[in-house]
Image (cartoon, rainbow, N blue to C red; front, side, top):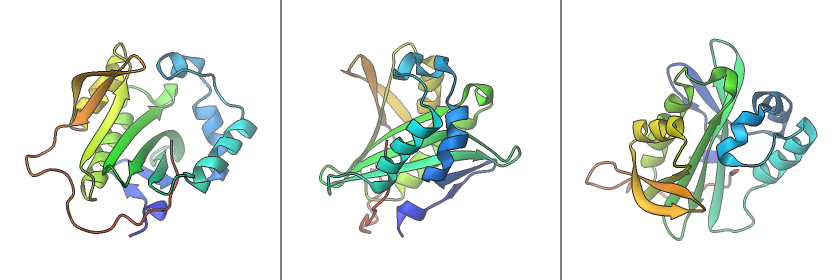
Length: 186
């Protein structure tokens, strides 16, 4: 399996591999400055987002790191509503994940559904740990992490709480399959 082309389907969503062509619509999805309260920065213009997406689609310059990025399509509206991403480190066997959903679609369980699907997909691959970093005041994102099976730790990085996957005692993945990805990233 080549994750770069992998679509992930949930009851309401399609997680589609990121393409540069998504930049125009995604610039509108991510245009609310309030989205950047916890993640920093400012909204990208469509051209700036296309430039960013070109870098992400090209992949990590580090051969030990794989960038995986998906846009979230809400099928009932035929609209992109946000993104999920994972950065995989082959040497460490780790995946660091993140998500963002545009303001008009928040409160509808989209981030939760997408993050749960992403974690489920990752657990079918040979990764030893899944983490996320969440601002301590971002209660909605903490609820998404908890729903996806992550739990907060005492560790902090750049002021954010480190959350770790608290899955089953047997560990994560372990299928023995090689993770031959060459995809995109955060």
